[in-house]
Image (tube, rainbow, N blue to C red; front, side, top):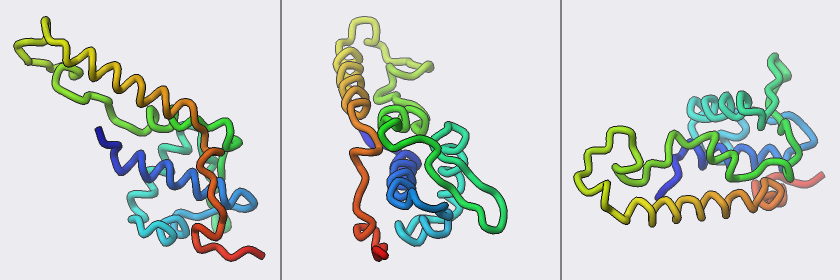
Length: 141
């Protein structure tokens, strides 16, 4: 299993916003820190804002900031909000045409594994991921 870049970038944006909690950050700033496309980050930030993880302030001196305390942001919830689906194999999909689905044991095993993956993410919050500003190349005042 592999998370989409969208989920990866969403987690990174939240991590950076948590470190810069004292001020608004910009998409351009996050783009430079991580070397990620500004256009892609705009979509990520938009979805995180709609999901209630970020607050966006419009205008010339606008930017984004965390909408919740880091310890209130469960990683599993972020991944569920940003992943398009968790269809690991064909039988997880609506259009399943596998001929052995009715008797196959693989789906149960993979479903158990996926559930364990999500449960693990649910045990952690954004607070568990907070780095030191220096880790982002930010000089302390």
